[in-house]
Image (cartoon, rainbow, N blue to C red; front, side, top):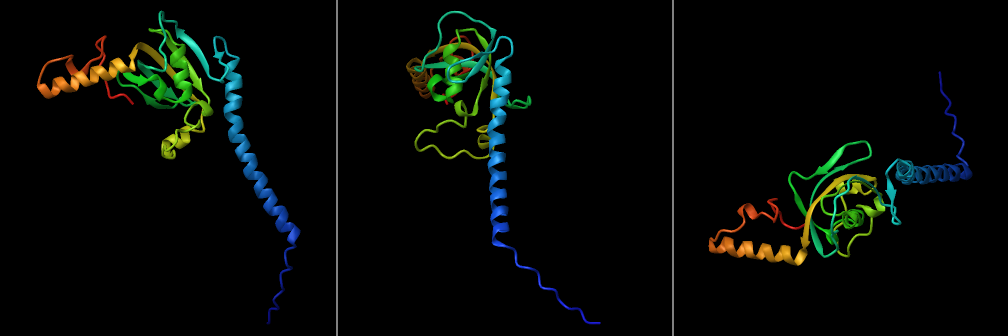
Length: 203
């Protein structure tokens, strides 16, 4: 028994055009949904009691008010922090009080530090544009891995501001410690900052 091959009708060009357009629309739709998710979260979050939204879109809630002066861009803040994703997953946290240069962190984190009096504890929500998804310094390496994923998400932090000092004073203290270590002299044990919290290299 012989089998006669039936030729397949050629696909019309307009069908291919429709297929390509459909795929492009699907990609654009997926990107729009990814962009919309942080917006929807922040809109709903901004309606919650006690949540304040700044002009930049940063959101925060005062957990403990603190008192006194607030740090500026020229200061190094000593903080405790926990960083979470909207689903509650912890992606970063301090193991001990950590010095952070106010001008050397992502814009949203810098903004909230400058709003906090000494001793305050805030809950903060940072939209992607104020976090890792924001403008990058010239010459900075591209984001990859964990940072690239974080760049697409709203980041939630609990931040406690323990103390702050002018960056020039911190650098002077570091220089003195290095000189004392070279000379074998004593100094503050373990490279401690005033207040007894251990110092770490400024990031």
